[in-house]
Image (cartoon, rainbow, N blue to C red; front, side):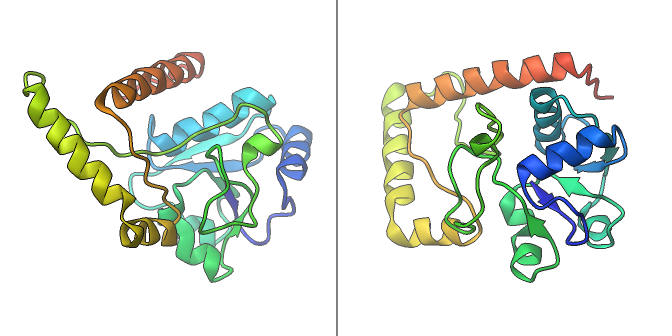
Length: 193
């Protein structure tokens, strides 16, 4: 959760109070309708009862954030980490369930809005009928790579945290995440196309 430096609210509680006093006056950027950036903002609005004006972008929202035409974005850290480090944007809170190694002093939204979590993740998949032995071999190699200290450091530098899982754990994670965001999409009546 990042705001332009001139935005008056610098904490999650201040942001919520400011937004409640000014319904729909805050412009929240997205990277397109139905994107993870959009859904993270919708989840925040649904959990806090605030209303913001959603502004969808096909191209980067960063220039308008830097210019102050947008007040907030729920962006993946790697997209804006350099602007935060340069003091051009202000990190208010982390959308994940833990503080970021790249922004250790920035609290999570969940510290103020219990249960809030919105993460962007990447995973490896294989065709449906791939033999179990090959899946296990791939999983073992991927998890070994993610456990390498140099790999962890590279991910951590841009605010990402690698997480090893078994194929069953990853399948459950995908199913749970799909169900969670399906409810938000339905509640916000988001239709892409």
